[in-house]
Image (cartoon, rainbow, N blue to C red; front, top):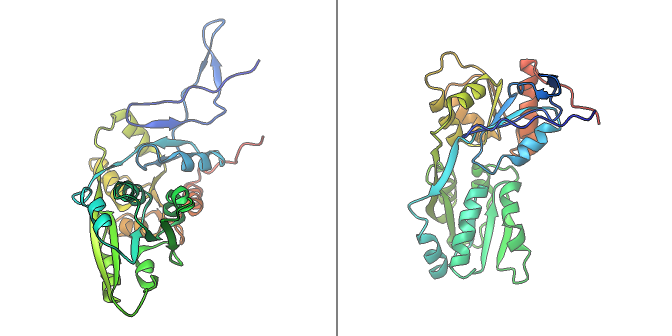
Length: 295
């Protein structure tokens, strides 16, 4: 007899990804029902719709995920100004440091009539957002620089200056982003205009059952300091939560240390592959890493 996989557990504010080969048990004669899904190994917390790649990568290692978006993006105070500034002014560089910043920038850039711009990006994931536009025939948007390490402070120290004259930079960013990029560039003589084109707010309507599942997981994976703060707020009434945090990179890892967390894992180079390895290492320490299924 061929058994099908059990249906995934899908509470309103979180999605559980059970093991693809869930076990079944007999119930009344002539019926077969699925056992309860196992508890999650890791909680994935990016905004809704952006966790699929991480979940798929973890499934290859037989890792059970609970998808629990902790933040969502909303318009920032300068969202409406972006297209006017791009239409009326010219810049030597546009600085984009995250996929969300890239998506918001592209909307404003297209509304401005797609002027010719040169972009510096942080991270391969950010660069990929521009792939379709940068490869178009008119080449009006050029992704021309990325730093040797995918960190804002490294970009600020390495961004090339076009000339000895003042080099104008537009930096569309999250309202919650730090000031190390604009400060670092300003110290090097760049003329930086920052626009807070979006911001993040915590997701607060989490079902108690989903939260209990998340708290039980040995590892919580976070991709930004905002998500980290949202998680700590969510569990503020939980006594003695001391499981692991797996961060996408050093910036979020440093924020976790400053917030007093102890069991922190992050890769030296930000990105999906290193993030997965950090999650696996955290699970090894917890003794919960399982062998991947053999096909």
